[in-house]
Amino acid sequence: MANGRDTIPNPMIGIVGFGAFGQLISRHLRPYFQMCAYDPDPELRPIAECHGVTLASLEMAASRPVVVLATPVGRLQEVVDAVSPHIQPQSLVLDAASVKLGPADILKRGLPEHAEIVATHPLFGPQSARDGIAGLKVVVCPIRGRRCFRLAAFLRHQLRLSVIMTTPEDHDREAAIIQGLTQFIARALVQIEPLPKRMTTKSFDLLLEAVNMSATSLTRRSGCGRRSWAGVSPKTSVVARPASLETSGTSMRSSFRFEARSTGCGAPLTRTDLFWRCWCKAAAMPKRPNA
Image 1 (cartoon, rainbow, N blue to C red):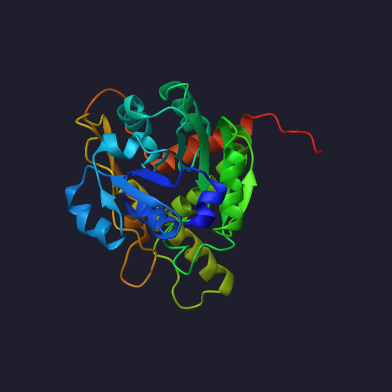
Image 2 (image 1 turned 135 degrees about the horizontal axis):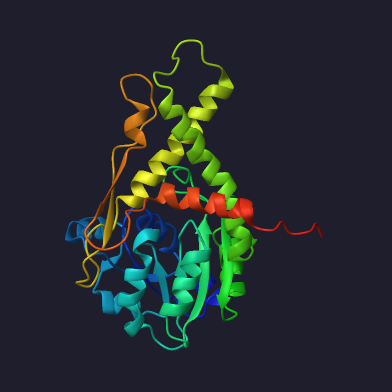
C-alpha cells in the first residue's frame, strides 16, 4: 500500500466495467489500492468477490479519486455521459481503449473540466498477460493535467511495465498499422479456408498463434458490457462469436464472425471495423519527420 501511495496520492480506485479487462486490472492493482467496481451485469458479483473487489453502484465507482473506464470502445460515449455527473474535483480518469483519437475527444468533451484525464492503451490482454505483466507494454497519452507522469512512474516501477509516452495521434498512426494489419491478415486467412494442417512451418504456426491471440482479445473485450449503462439503452451492441483458430475441428471463419445489432440510429460498428478505419486514416496522415 505504501508504494502505491508514494506514487499516486489517492489510493482509492473505481473501475467502471468489470469484464475480462476490468478483472485483469483489479488483479494487478489489488496489492496497491482499495477498489470498487461497477458493471451492469449482476452475475459478475461472485467474480468480483473472488478478486477482492466490491461491486458498487455507478455513482460510487465514478466518484473515486481515480476512475478507470474499462469498457468497450463502442460504448465509451455512453459510459462517459453516465459517469460525468459523479466525477469529483481533482479526480484522475483513465480509459483503456485500443484506439485513442476518438476516445480522447470523448473524454475531453464529456468529462468536467475539474477532472484530469489520461488516455491509456495496455498493449496486452488477459491471454498475453496470463504469465504476468512485467515487461509488457502500455501506452500513456496525457490529455489534461500533469498526473500522467506520476501514473507512468507507478506503472514503470511498481508494475514493471514498459511505458510508452506519446500522443493520441501518434498512437493511432502506429497502432492502426500494427493491429489493423493483424486483422487484415486474419480476414484474409478466413477467406482461404480450409488451411493446411500437416505441412505447416514454424513461421506459419506463429502467424496462426498471433491471429488467434488477436481473435481471443476481440471476443473478450467486445463480449463484456453489453447491458445498458445507468439505464441508458445502447444504440449499438456487438456480439462476438467464439474465437479459436485451431484448424482441427474449428473453423477460422467462426473466429472472426462478429454480429453488430443496431437498435437505434447509426450503422453497426465492430472493433475490427474501427481498426480498419484507423488504418486507412493513418495511411493518409502526414508522416512525422525523423528527429
